Amino acid sequence: MTKNKQPLTIVKMKTMKQQGDKIAMVTAYDYPSAALAEQADVDMILVGDSLGNVVLGYDSTLPVTLDDMVYHTRAVRRGAPNTFVVTDMPFMTYHSTVQETMYGVRRLMQEGFANAVKMEGGSEIALMVDACVKAGVPVLGHIGLTPQSVHQLGGYRIQGKTPEDAKRLLEDALALERAGAFGIVLELVTDQVAAYISERLSIPTIGIGAGAQCDGQVLVYHDILRYDPSYREKKMVKTYADIGATVRESIQAYVQDVKQQAFPAPEHTFSAGDEVVESLYGNANGTSVSNKKVQHT
Ligand code: KIV
Image 1 (cartoon, rainbow, N blue to C red):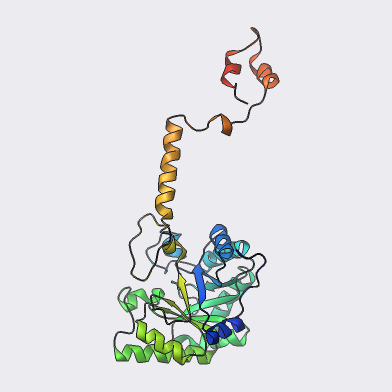
Image 2: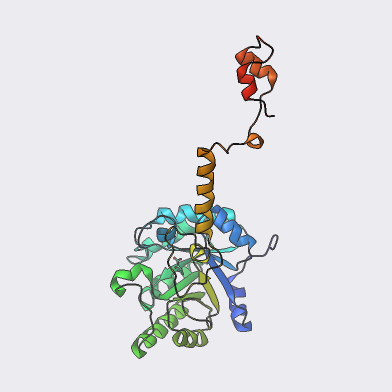
């Protein structure tokens, strides 16, 4: 755990790539998840719109709003004041006009206190990336499986399985780099294609299900910890704990304790003392029935 660590900068990230130092990123959505991630020394936190799936209970990221992202980004910033925080631009907030894009970016940075924003898409959003970068806003790109386009992609499919697809991914990555993105998330991209893109770019790639050759990795907090009521194994994820089971079992034990009157026990109880008890119940025989009930101090 590092005290008062210096947050990563986009300049340092480029140096890390050049030196072969891997970047470790994790998602977080609230104060405790962010604080624990910062204590664990992550390089960057992503307030992902996976918020929709893992925290808000939607079946995709599409219903997540700008207000949701601002609210959760603020909480993350309070938990991780010394970590570089990137936040997702939610579905359809950066596709119509530069003005609308700027409105979203302004709120995420001024009200949410994010350091940077992430946008899904390739060449087609290069104009928006360029506008943000020119306004001084660091932008992280995101190509490959882009969950906001899940219906267009026909499901959560692996990308980069044909030569045409590999070429398209490379062109998108280069377009984002030219537009000024400081890095690019590669999601569910085949290993070799991700490796080739990473070699061709001067900016870091952050992989999720994109193999070990990316310049960094990102995973969803709830996946790492299996903090999910119906967790299913995912090939791209390594789990490090089973928090879901721990939470379920702990709450079950609490419920049992309450039913069996094992909680609260004397050590969890505050006593008012004899004077107060006597003022309430009287002390006709020296000891009232009620006082006996409140014997533990
Ligand atoms: O929303 C998210 O958590 C993401 C990561 C999966 C990269 O975009």
